[in-house]
Amino acid sequence: MTEDFARAVTGWYAGAARALPWREPGCGPWGVMVSEFMLQQTPVARVLPVWSAWMARWPAPAALAAEPAGEAVRAWDRLGYPRRALRLHAAAITIVDRYGGDVPLDPVVLRTLPGVGAYTAAAIAAFAGGTRVAVLDTNVRRVYARVYDGVADAAGSPTVGEWERAQARLPDPPGAYSVAVMELGALVCTARTPRCEECPVAAQCRWRAAGYPAGVRRGRPQPYAGTDREVRGRLLAVLRASHGDVPARELDMVWPDPAQRSRALAGLVADGLAEHTADGLYRLPS
Image 1 (cartoon, rainbow, N blue to C red):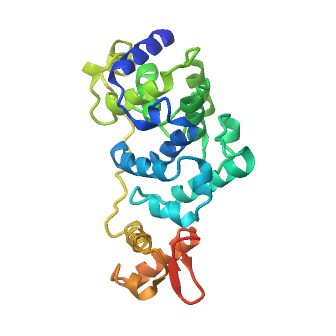
Image 2: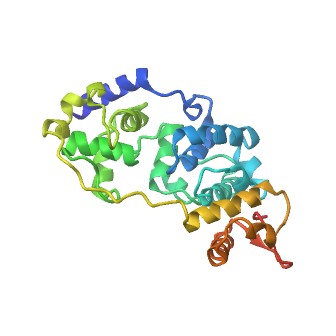
Image 3: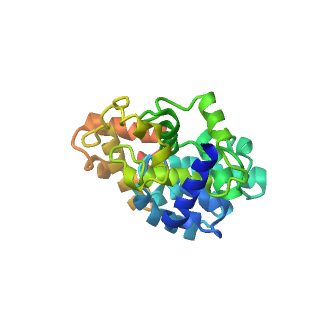
């Protein structure tokens, strides 16, 4: 089944893949790495313009490493979870200091970089280096859960056994296999409305054969409006728009609740996303 699955999915991908700039042959490992940082919990449509602007400004790790961390936070714009920008900046510095400015392609080495976990390391190694290493994101895990295990979705975090099974399913050479499975999960085998009539492996899917048994009900998405996350985002937007220090009175206008505003601002400073100067001003990290 594994060989037939790989053949069907890669054949489907050859004609159905989205044209994304970080998949182009000339993109290079840095472009792939930037895309993986940006795509964490963020849709492709929101990432595309920010990624393009980022790569035009910082086409290599050395270019980003030479700038203050605050510029990375500013360029992150409204992608959300801006600590990713700080980690990417820190990773760029490490790449320059330890690896001569070239993104390493060994997944073990990649795991030592700031902000790079198991999935991101595997994705960079597989997509940029062609390494035969399993890539397990939520889309891939969902496809495997349905096709091989007959359940609606994978639960919890990937286990050691799940990584081992995913590794065993890789064809040799892997080619576009991993990105093909990911694309299948993103476009066809989706979480809520799978388009099974378009699926190249529908005949092999044990979940479909079992009559689509329901999976574990996931919690409702966390609200955004009125939360500290919204306040942080608004405060950070003011700091991004300014190319200098911002007095506290300007930030006071962002949110009416002083206690919540103060808590959110203190959180930004604690996370390294903002700096509080000795004279009481605020700015992006230097």
